[in-house]
Structures are given as structure tokens and as C-alpha cells.
Image (cartoon, rainbow, N blue to C red; front, top):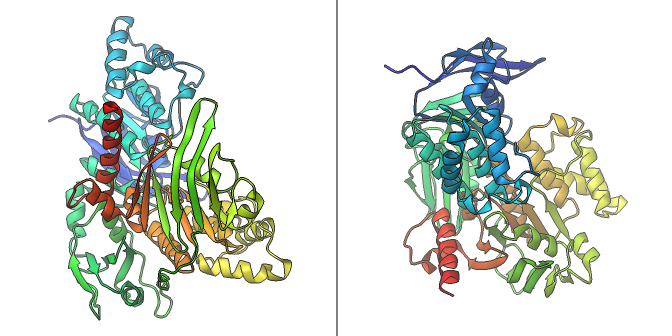
Length: 567
């Protein structure tokens, strides 16, 4: 019987008084893909750095490739491939030079280097870019190059920390093709991710939260444990149904999807009791459902449950809060945005999807009045983004992917700073801050510095800061990156509540499942808007009866590429 590649027993790691990892035990066999899944701050990076013999465990023991990580750290490091969360390549070197450098420090024989480099770069689709500097590659291409650099010495074990973080779905799929080949070659893979759907690519999964294991097992086994606790609810009138679900202590969480459908996670194997026309039917659990059920907090005391979002406003004749007509933006000869036309109505949530480099961020910068269009025109909240940019910025809220908060200030001090920056009148400051804090569920947060808050709380604080001046339009750029499903679901209920108040919302996301929470989707590729409409309409346009958001996303990209080849 072959020996395990990794044996971890009761691993723990402490920094001073802070316990970041506690009681983690598992084994990884030869050729096995083992996923470590959890939100930011769960302890994933700490665990992987212990496996890579970079950190020593405070408690417990760990053997990797038969070596003790405490006593033989150099031997462990020499035999594994370790890809850190950040980019670990040299941006001034070309693709070929980065591969050659990685081969040199790993003592790859010169006779073997040429064949391995050719094979790996072909597998990654990088053979045409050997002479291009790493710093000039897209995010997805840089991730694939880093993976190739860690495969050049043909290690028996790959340890990958969030390899697809910030990478679009198309690049994620290409990354996993490389990993599938590595597994087929007999390599063991341990990877960390906050994308719950990537757990399905694993042979076994460890779910982590706050440094402690929630569950471990094959994805199918974990889903079977959540069976009977996940329901699809269909109703013609979602508002009353949401209020019933909010008041039910047996409900862990619920999410309204596009249209009149809700998804509900329960504490017990029984459907929610609903009145009216609402009907519940058991649904097949996803890995997000599994994590939600496994990490369910105790029921809230009676009368303290989170309120349901208010009713979405009925369609009115109010003017659109965003109108873009033929918008384009050039940087020299490069066209970052190309002839984009779209509109957003008050109370509408528009999801922008697209590969890295598709032009989403540039388009948002134009709509925020931060960048003038090279051609076309756009009006936001009734003002021209080019000629009246200050008026535009006073009427919008913007939340970036990386929280733009001040870590040494308290939550209240951050809210006060942003309220003043947005020009909230002095007489209204106290009331506006109290309103924004209550809206974001931050009533209990006050004097603690932001650096001491959890990622989910910082996320809600960033949203509160973006809406403290009551904007007409809200732009959210990857707002839920790295946050656990329960916190993401709660965040989307906040977005629904803002939309119910008439705020127009534009959101970008790499969590394709979140697209089902949007009223319409805009799919971008190479600066162009290649599809726009509700998910059901886009699915029908591709001739599909049922499809995931990823199917629709990849279907339109494939159609666009085919049209360009034929042109």
C-alpha cells in the first residue's frame, strides 16, 4: 500500500494570543486532489505554509513526502511546487526567462529543460508569448505562467494558495485543465480557494472557518449531508414569503434569484412552512449550500432576526439613472471600451461579467466620471460624465474590490470621514451615519479599529461608507471577493434593500452564481458589450433550455470568437 504524501495530525498555529489554526487533521494520498475551502481569514494560507515547510506548527505534527516539516524543511521545500497567493514571478523577465530561472534554481538538467518548457507552455497556451515580459501579461496568463514555473521540476506534490483568485471564469477553466493534466501525471495537489464551486474539482475537501475544520470528505458525501435542508421556493409574490422566511428560526439563510424564485437553507430536514401561493421543493445542494449548513450560527433570539428586504418598486416612468450611448475609450492604439450602449433604471441591479481585460473597470471609471470617454456619451443621475463629472461623483457611491477603508480608524470614524468627503451637511451627519450603519447592520460596531474587524464586517462597512450620502447610483467592483457564503448572502440582501429604495446598482463579480441575483447581465469581451439582458433571455438566445451562468458566459464568448473567425 502506497504511503500518504501528506499526514497532518492536530495541527495548530498561534500568533501570540491569536489562534489562527486549531485541531486540523487529514491525509493526502498519491495522485489525490485535496481542496481547502473557506473564506478569507479561515486559516487556509497558514495551513498551506505549514505543509510547504515555510511555517512551523505551534501544535501537532505534519509529514510531507515522508519528511517532518519541522526537522527537514529544506528537503520538503526542494521537492514540492509551492505557488503563493500573490504573483511570485519577475515582471521584468520574459515568459521564457522566468521558466529558465525557475528551472535553474530547481536544478533541472539542461537536456530536459527544452522539452518540459515546450510542453508546459503549449499546455498553458503561452507558447506565442515566450518573448513577452511577465508584467505585460494578463492576470490569468500570469497565473498560468506561475503554475508552469512550479511544474518545471516535476514535483510529486503541488501546493497552490488561491490559484484562481481574481481570475475570470474562462482563465479559471484553463488553469484547471493544466491541473487535471498534473493529476493525470500522478501528482498530488493541495489547493486553497474561497470559490465554493472549485471544491467539486477535488477528490476530497476540507471546509475551514476561523481556523477550525467544519467538515471533511468527498464533495458528493458532503452534499449528501446537506440533502433535505436546501429548498427552491417559487412564488408570484416574493415579498411576503421573504418576511415569513426571515421570521422562521429554522431558516439559516435565503437568497432571491432572478425572477420570483428563492433558495432556502434550513437547520433541519424539513421544508419551510409557507402560506399563500408559495411552494417549496427540495433542491440539490451546491457546495455553497453545504458550507452554509455546516457553518450555521445558533438561531437568533425571537424578535432579533434580520429583516427581509423591502418590496422592490414597481416599474415607473422615472428616467434611467445611467444612459450610455456608443461609449468608447482608447489608450493610444488600444481600444479598452468599444461602442458600449446600455441603461440602468432606478432600482435595477445590473451585473457586469467578462474575462480579465474585458473593459469592465474602464467602463465603470467612465461612468463614475473619473475617465472621459474618447467617443460616445454617458449620463449618470442626469449629468454628463465628461462635462459634469463633479456633479456625477456627488450622486454615486463606489465600493472597490479592495476595501478603501482606513484601518487605524474606527467604523464610526470611517463613516464620518466619508460623509464629510461626500459633502453631507454638518447638521445631517449624525442622522446619516446612524442610517447607513443601521442599513448595513453595523449598529454594534463603533470604537474598534477597522483592522480588528472581520472581513465580512469590513465589507459591510465599506458599503455603508459608499452609501452614507444616499447616492442615486451604486458601483460595486468585486464586492464579495473572499467572503464566506453566509456573509455574501447577507450582503446581497443589503443590495436588494438598496435597490428597493430606488438605487440603481452596477456590480462586477467573478462569482458567477451571484449573477442570478441580478435583474440583467451585461457580458463584456475585448471592450465590447456582447450580450445584455435577463439571464433567462440570454439562456434562450443561445438556444439552451436549462443552463448555468457559466454555460451562458462561455457560450457567448465562444459565439463571439466564432463570429470573429468567420469575419
